[in-house]
Image (tube, rainbow, N blue to C red):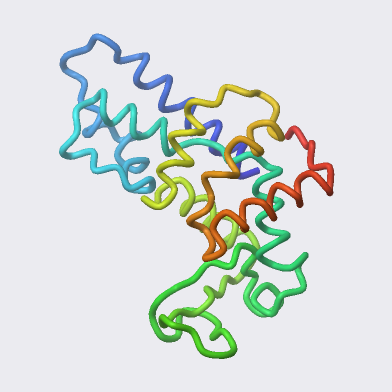
Length: 191
């Protein structure tokens, strides 16, 4: 569902910019359909030209291959059995950094964080998509996604997984685990 919604939003961006192509009077940063997208996807539209707004929105308003989303949810929630998923619907191991924002991890950590608590799975999924599509740590992911034209989501997922090394302290080992999860579970889903 989330990817379907993103596809529709991306098509809206494409249509609006196509509709106003060559118009010197139209300002994307004043369009009532573009302004909320700029806010939601952390694009500083007030200071950018139409072309830069278009480029930034197309980079960020985009899908994430379903096999990759599933592999990360499986790994981060330990197939739905982790304490963070059971108590807080946290499918993706998302952290927050202020007291009371989530569930305290057991044991000592080098930096203070809690594991974000969500009211339901949809909130967790939305937060994950927002993080991947807006956080500067995943700029490489977004750039690579833009360059990959594969229509098969599994092929796209295998090409993009290497860019998710910032997601975990395990870095390359993390991306290898994700690759193996996709391969072993035959995640050739194309929806």
